[in-house]
Image (cartoon, rainbow, N blue to C red; front, top):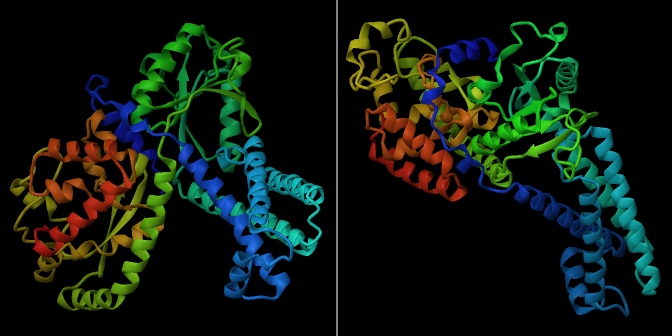
Length: 505
C-alpha cells in the first residue's frame, strides 16, 4: 500500500533533529557474507543432487542399491570412491569459483534477468569443460559419458530455474513495496535527474526515490521542483532517518573533503553511500565500479546486515505460520462462528498499521469490540491508562464478553499469521503501531520501524503491563540491536507461557 501521503505528514510532525540519538552502527555490525555462503552451499547441493539423479537414471537403480554400490566401490567398475568424490567436488568448486568471479552472488537486483541467465549457462558450460577435460586426463573411460552430460544438463536447468523463481518472488515483493531500498540523491543537476529516471524506470533494481538534496552551486536551470527537493546537505541525515533511507547517491560535483565527511556520517548511521565516478576523479580510485543497471557508481560504504539470518527468519515465519493456521483451522472456524453469533458486525477487524519503513498495511484480528468501537473511542480517552501516544483501558466497555476471553489468551491475534504469510509481519518483532501513534513519534522513535513488525516481541513477554511508552520503545530498540534467531526462539518460548497464563489484554 502506498505510503507517500501518510509519510509526508509524519515527516513534518516528528521532533527536531536534535532529539535523534541512536547508535545505528551497532545494527550493521554483522557481515553479509553469510548470504553468499548460503548460495554457494545451495550450488554445491545442486551439483550433488544432480549427479545422484543422473547416476540412478543411467544405471537404472534405486537409491538404496545405488548408495550401497557406491560405498562398496562397485557402482563404476575399476574406480575408487574417493576419485569419484574428488571429481564431483572439483566440478562443484570450479562452478562456485567461476560464479563468484562473474558476480553471480552479488545482489540480484543489480543485474537483469537475461544477463543472470546467460552468466549461469556460461558458468555451467565452463565448469563442464573443466570436468570433461579432467576425465580425459585421468583416463576415466569407465565413467559413462551419459551420466556426465545428464549431470551437466540437470545442474544448468536447476540453477536457471532456481534463480528464475527467486527473482520472480523478489519482483513481486518489490511491486508490493517490500524489500525495496529507499534512496536520496545529493544534487539537482542533469546527472541527478538522469540517475533518478534510471532508478525509477528499471523495476528489478528495487529502488524507491525519496527526494533530492539540494547542493550549493547547482545550476538553477536544472533545479528540481519544490516537491522533489526535500532538504539541504546540512539536513541530509535527518531526512535519511525520516524517510528510512538505505542508500545515498552523490550526483553533484563537490570537494573531496565534503564527501569524506558525509562518508563518516554514513558509517555512523548505517546508511550506504555511492558516488558517480565521473564526478569524483581520483576518489576511491581502487574501488570497483558497480553498475546500477547501466549507471556506473562507486560504493564508498556498504552497511553490513545479517542477510542470511533474515532469509532464515523469513523461511521459519512461513513454515511456522502455515503449519499453525493449518492445524488450528477447525478451531478458527469455531471462533469465527461464535463471534458472528454473539454480536453484529464482521468476524475480522482489519486496521491500517504502519510496518517496516513506514509501509501501510492492513492488520487482521478477530473482532473483540462492538461494531462502532472506533467512533466511540473519543468518549473514553479520559480513561486511558497508558502515557505518551499509547491507548489502553483495562475494562473497556466497548469489548464484548467473548472478546474479553479472546484478549485474555491472545486468541484475537491468531489471524495475524495471515499477515506473516503475506510478508507484512513476522512472528517476532515490534508491534505495528497505528498511524495516529506514529504521527506523535519523535525522530528517535522511528527506530522501531526499521524492521518488520511482529505478532509477539520482547515487550509482550517482558514489559506488557508497563504503561511507560519510553519502556515500550526501549525494549523494541533493544530487540532490534540484539536480534538473532536464538533471541526469537527465546521470545517464542516465553510467549507460550504468557498466553497460557492468561495475562493478555
